[in-house]
Amino acid sequence: MPDLVRITNVEKSYCQAGAYFNGSKVKVLKGVTFTIEEGCCVGLVGESGSGKSTLTRLILGLELPDKGGGAILIEGKPVRRWIRENQGKMSVIFQDYTSSVNPRHTVGETIAEPLQAMRREENLDDDINVLLGKVSLSSDLKKRYPHELSGGQLQRVCIARAIATNPKFIVLDEAISSLDVSVQTQILSLLHNLRLEMNMTYLFVAHDLQAVAHLCNKIVFLYRGKVVEETGRDQLANVQNVYAKALLGSVIPFEV
Ligand SMILES: Nc1ncnc2c1ncn2[C@@H]1O[C@H](COP(=O)(O)OP(=O)(O)OP(=O)(O)O)[C@@H](O)[C@H]1O
Image 1 (cartoon, rainbow, N blue to C red):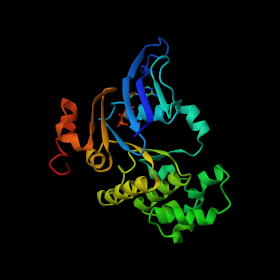
Image 2 (image 1 turned 90 degrees about the vertical axis):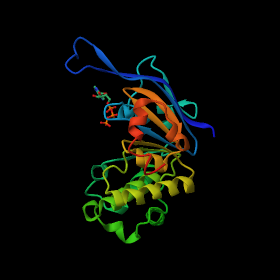
Image 3 (image 1 turned 30 degrees about the vertical axis):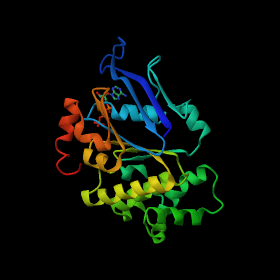
């Protein structure tokens, strides 16, 4: 499979807390390199503070790597240019589904947002019904407000909104972490089926290796700003890095 996203030697530094005036910086990403192949799901795992969110912001084009600190290319183009030229082709689903939606917007209005932003409004009502069907929600929910839905239903609405513009690439940022375990399994299976059906590429950022092992073809372990191991899902049991092994310890007996 060709690479959709190529992350090469990426470095990112921030001013150290309390050192804004003397300019001293701390490097949060230290030469991160990996690729996300088209049509695949790549899992990015690491403990808190390892740099996952920082890297995610760079991949979403919200921030840039340090000057001279590597590059992130999507289909060979710098992220921000690719996003400009491919409107609606990248989506993101966040952990906190409650704050991801406007509490004053109905389900129908929420799902309509990206379509309206792209002026695809000819068959809005039908499109919303199709999207609700794709995430296994009844079209009766269209008029409901977010507080009238369960967490699982609301995350399905966020997924419907994320896929509304037929994206090529979706970043799932701890997308199932806030859900009950029983609901997590359903959402994981929905995400898996949608990816295959719509030929999408995922970056699945998570703490939870069990979920990553379930959904992803390839898993990248980030530790203190560096990729310490990269492995195919089938090779998870053979990881060599001590940190990756420690993370996996609790998963292998159940999942792999
Ligand atoms: N804007 C910022 N300014 C200064 N330091 C930052 C900034 N963003 C992140 N950091 C620091 O970078 C390091 C990596 O943080 P990051 O949020 O990327 O890790 P993470 O792996 O996503 O953690 P978590 O899983 O807890 O969200 C942390 O030490 C954090 O304090």
